[in-house]
Image (cartoon, rainbow, N blue to C red; front, side, top):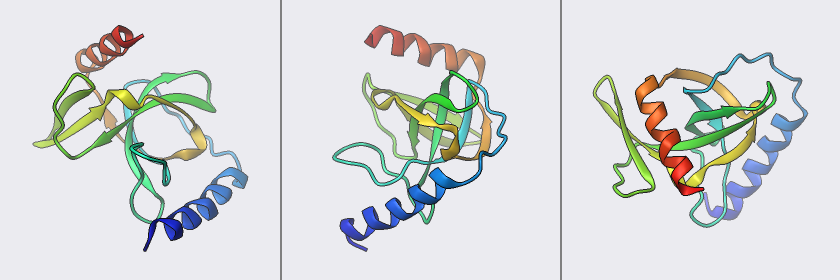
Amino acid sequence: MDYLELFIEWTKLKIRIHISPEKELFFHEREIWWASLGVNIGFEQDGKNETFERPILVVKKFNRHVLWVLPLTSKERIGKYYYQIEYQGEKSTVILSQLRLISSKRLIRKIRKLSSSEFKEIKDILKSFL
């Protein structure tokens, strides 16, 4: 599928997500979820599969509808804008430079909760960027 077709498919799904009834989701800071992030522009992290999903870390919950998130990737990335995590032998990288605000309607399913110490390190790094 070429990029134009992907944008069209994502737009169709985004409309369905937008008009879907509000789900009663209970999410909290430090949790990692699958979320429909879509097809994005330039170097922004895209989602994958039919629901254009990607794992995200919930950084800040503003209310039950809006949250700040950081996308994760399975690719090992090194540098000041990346933070390595590991869970049950699987490594992931938190992409610190791609903090974004999303609607809770994008959340699909919870994966796990990050340790308090790792979450504190990530938040401290984010604060240093501001």
